[in-house]
Image (cartoon, rainbow, N blue to C red; front, side, top):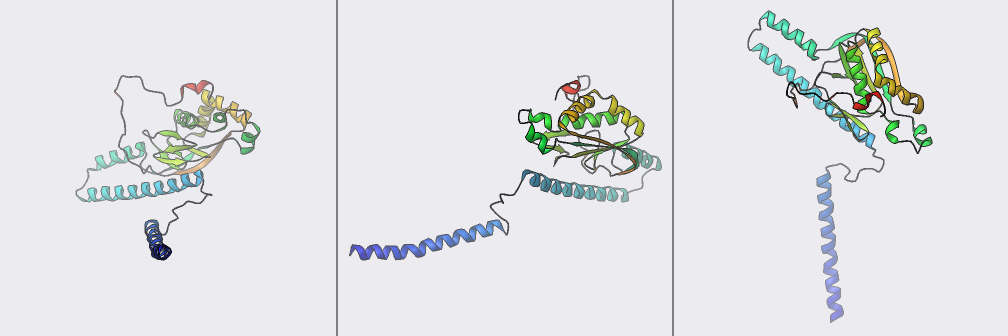
Length: 257
């Protein structure tokens, strides 16, 4: 009798277990909705950063389109005084929300090649990569050289643009980017080049270019078509006038990394 009872329980338990398994598979398929719940082992950080960059760029473009629609509708509500319209146009060009074209320079920064990293295991890894202060130093030098407009990774840079390191990527307007970093400026090419040559921080960076093959390349451009800034113009933070501000370039600008 005991043996028959055990067999009966086993026969009843097997269908129940299969039913539970089926419910789990159905729930997993519904939750996944066609996506892989277990990412491929080949997924890399670089791929994730690039995907996030594409999504963020798409949202920025959508925001810019909606903003233009709002401005057009506001204009249709009533005529604008010609003097006010001209002043708005001038301010738009100064702020950076209109596209511009002109001659200038492009500076490209790269991390040290993989073989250099492999052949120098005892060297501090921070010496072999481009940092946010390296990008900031180039940007500051180009502004000092009279740059009329500036972009990083083909995205327009304005006065409120912040550059921040997150891991091995640089975040610009909330979007992460991986090297190489392309910094483009429109303006007098001789003055821009002189400003780069006179920068003490870039002079220090050049030492690492020689020692560890960091990438630093300057290319003159006869004509650059630079897009308008498409992000928000709202300030995220502010400082009290009269107080000393933190310099944009790292305090180690004149030596060390």
